[in-house]
Image (cartoon, rainbow, N blue to C red; front, side, top):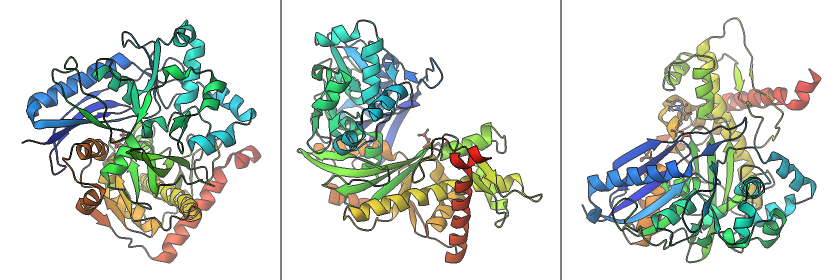
Length: 501
Ligand code: ADP
């Protein structure tokens, strides 16, 4: 029973604790849903106290089940970018957390663009100016929460992402820290130097005092103070959710790549010890930091992956639950010619057209709901091919070479029709993770490596095996014809097209 690692996975919609054994197998697991607060259209908040209570509850429950004596370390992974400010003396939040999805700072981002900060942000932080990241959220809080700027100037306020807030609370206010992967998502951190960027802090009026100390991903984050959930345990690993998922998929060498298919899809490719500069608006970020040495990654996202299936279910009522999409897709006419372009929030990589809107094209009298559902699943495969094409260019430019076999995880990977179609459209094999909780596993790996429960990265890579491997089965000419149809469909939903119509 000894030698277990407790992973805390604080996600956007839930908070979970899972205990992993020495072999990396999940055991006790408890989760709590998280309330989403929408004060205005485009605004999304979380209550930090609710998150903190949930962490205490889920950890208390699994520790009760497994026994504190059997747990040697805690690893934390978390929703990234979400921004919290709290009182340094009391630990009390001074506002709701502003969630990564929140768009309230779009005007400030436009201002930064107009002032010409784009090149600096990309060069230094690896990111693009966007409300998504923490920087402008923190600037908004300082400007809009009564008295906050003055209090911050007196050194009485801490800023942090969710990991940082939890570390502060778990250690009874002993530590105001974060890890390098989380710092890399603030749009305030120089990812090459590993330091907060003085120019951005100055422009946004952020007092450096309120920023957390940045530590290694596999690091020493103190210990729980016993108040939290009754036991004192060392915290030895912290990583943002996508970086943790890459670790859980053992993407530990340059050119290894994973895609997580949840609501959206996040693709992360290991680029080794140098920051790759994307020509395709991919993000450069820190994948992990160990003994001060940083490993970098390229990251791209598809806005609508599982969300397209939710839309087919909730808005069109074509399916009763997500799993029905597989049964229907099997009944679809393989030659229906139907394409669904889920540009509900515009188009991402490589087109980048915020004004584009979704469409279903190629309908005939014979088209059925099965054809539309199949087209919805197929759109995820096409978007992945688009994204990987862009990433491949950037990786080649950076001299990293060809990307490895795509490792996939997340809710959609249980759909074998969608995964087979993904392999077919990519013309390459796709491997599904054995442990569905890849993100939590990654957090456990970081912490467990730090205390010697798990071997080094080479050992993690050796032990990784897919639950299932999908080989492409579609003939090359059919694949290219289908993809050409997708490219044409995408061209027809562009915003320039819409304004002509
Ligand atoms: P998140 O962490 O973003 O909430 P999950 O990894 O839990 O996402 O995956 C949930 C998403 O996966 C939902 O958007 C759902 O529509 C989709 N999904 C779940 N099961 C299936 C399935 N069998 N076929 C297609 N999509 C699915």
